[in-house]
Length: 71
Image (cartoon, rainbow, N blue to C red; front, side):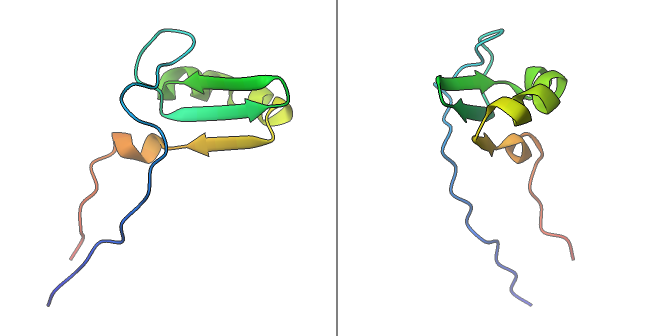
C-alpha cells in the first residue's frame, strides 16, 4: 500500500525570530498596529491575550513535532 503525505505550505522560515528571545519563530500574530513573532514557548504563555489583540494568527508549531505516517 502506497501512502502519501499531504504537502503543507509554511509561511514562517528559519530567519523569522521570536520578539521575546530571538529563538526561531513558529507563530506570527498580526494586529492593527503590526506583527509579533513568537517561539512556541512564549506564544503558549501569551496565547489568550494575543487572541484578543490579533486579527490573524499563523501557528506553525506543528513543525516542532516530527511528522510520521502511521500504518
